[in-house]
Image (cartoon, rainbow, N blue to C red; front, side, top):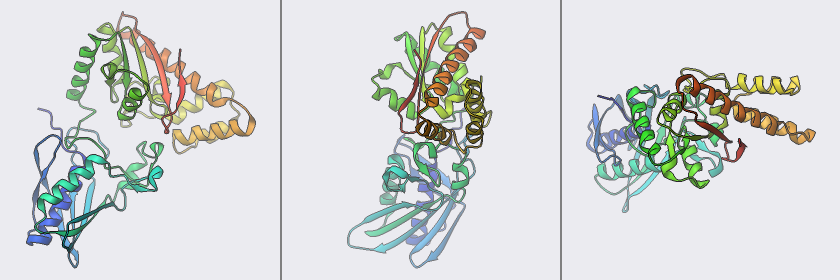
Length: 358
């Protein structure tokens, strides 16, 4: 049976609930119950520590367990502080502290998204004994360091991790069982559509709908692009559009068809190699090679184009898209005799299209 574990917002909420028990009942719990809302279940979460840190204020610590998932947050500590001030009306103040990312486009608002916010509010109200001002701060001590291994910054979240997700159950995107579920979805949709849209994650799926693709055509692949491409071909899908963030799909241009960072990276190396092959000046190639992210490398190219009235972004990314297309078709041909046409659409962190083949 698949051990899915829970998402980060669940552990943050558990820490908050533990604080409430300690402050209101002087109970130091080893475990607390969290209403997940989605799905409508209750999770029992282990509490590592609880302590009073001031008048009417407590700190509790849990530790993330995403189950059978190579999630980078596995075993990371999640702290919460809660301060209770008796009041005639209940008011909840929820914010992110150290290690919780900030959303640049929303005036550095804490990256606590809708499900996490709803989860926290529901469980606070369920465990509050009397009306009060409840001041909550979520802290991820390892958040800043872990965020450097994600694409958060590329999507406008800086200085930490996001409390993200739409469910309390962690989906182990690297497990065989989860791949089986994606493959089943693929087979079902292939019966209805000759053309499918492959998206690694939520950003691609959201953009695909805004571009006008039918929801029935959309297939989430997570990091298993190679396996999903081959399976699509074997069930007779005539064409596939691979739609995704350039900083992820650049790996395909280098022949890497399982894109999880635990298995392979090489993104800046691949981008630098393409730039060198096309003749970009060596000094700019060096800047790209030494860039902190693929998004910052794209900005280096854009700045160079602006200063020199050149079109390197268009040349490099169009070449990248065509190479992803060719590499994908070659990968399919190694495992299937059915010919499936590939198209590629790459977007940047603003979800603006920077390459479209065909």
